[in-house]
Each structure stands twice: as C-alpha cells, then as structure tokens.
Length: 183
Image (cartoon, rainbow, N blue to C red; front, side, top):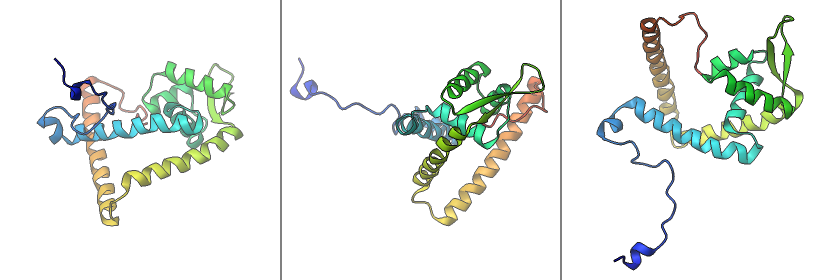
C-alpha cells in the first residue's frame, strides 16, 4: 500500500549532483574530484552553447581551436583535442557546410588545412565572451590570493600529470615526440 506522500510526483533530479562520487575514496582523491568538476562544467556547456549559438559544445571547441590555431589538419585537430579523427572530420564537414570553417588543400596532396571563415570568426567572438563569463562564474567567490594559489596548484598538478603521462607512455612504448593531446 502506498501513502499519499509516495504518490506525489517527484521533481526530476539533476544528472550530476553532490554525493555522486561513490565511496569515501572517491571523495578523497583529487583527480576524481577534478574529473567530477569537469563533468559539471562540461554538462553546463553542453546545454549552454547549443541554446545560445546552435553549435554543440564539441562544435564550439572545434571552431575555437580552428580560430586560435588556423591551418591544422584534421589529424592534428583530432590529436590536439584527443578525439577520433572520424569524429573531427564529421564535425568539420558540418562546420564547413555552415560556412564557419574552410578546408584549404595542402601541398597538392590529399591533406587539408582547416581554418575559420570570416563568418566563423564572427560567430566565434561572442562565444569567447560567453566562455569568459562562464570562467568568471566558476571562479566567483575566490579572492585574488586564492586565484594565484589556484594558478600555482594547476601548474604543479599539470607538471605532475605530464610527468606521469610521459612515464606511462615510455612504458607503453608510445612516441615521446608526438604532439600534446591536452585539448
């Protein structure tokens, strides 16, 4: 038998919420907490960018990369963004059809360089402002001293993560001279 309280409709729960970390170890480990934070940020971006621009968060990141480092090949974009080349290629095709990116032949072969069109740069500008505003919201409530400390912490953690990555790549026999996959 159910009570009236059980029969009431429940409000939808957010897909990510406090307490979704699992057990105590997950609440202790810095890298798990950082991944969780990134999931929250990414989820917000996944909702925001399509609403504001019609571009998915992935398309926005691809457009951003092309605007900031024009002339990369699809392979280089995939590697830089740590994504499958086929996924990048499909998204580039959509953005070319939308008039935001262009594909320029390279060296007479099958290779192409991906660059923004004037329209792509026009679309990119307000999205940069949106990203900056998101960063401000994320950092709201931190003092200047805390922001400096956060910068230093991120530098040290990045150095440590890169050292760990290099060690693991050496163990796996990966090419140590390959470009960074830091997105």
